[in-house]
Image (cartoon, rainbow, N blue to C red; front, side, top):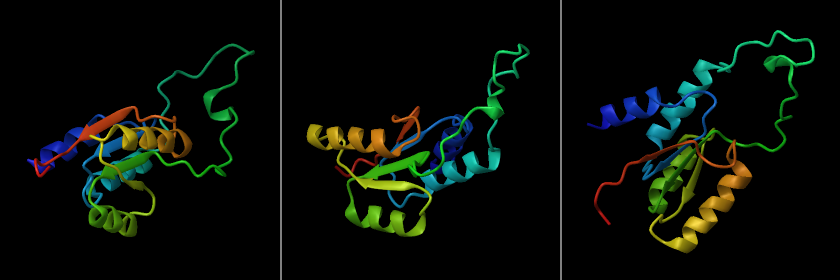
Length: 132
């Protein structure tokens, strides 16, 4: 049923979302979502404005990219999995975190605020297998 889980994650994530997967293992799902976001492009959810005082969405100032924020983050408690994910998928960020430990969750929150677009994930998927 992994393919169903990945499809659901992909269908419910838009280019305007930021995505986090808890239990990312080797990062396959996180990469699939990142690729999907890139392929979809910048699709606005708003109609272009008609009044003269408003600035059209595509003409608003954008981030210069110097902050290097990512749209997809994966977390796992396995150092081997995170090392492999970071090696394979450089466009995403992967973190070694045990989400059941409050101190590690605090660190995860701080990391998201500094490196994730939107400062917090708008979509969170959980894929834990029971080997706790």
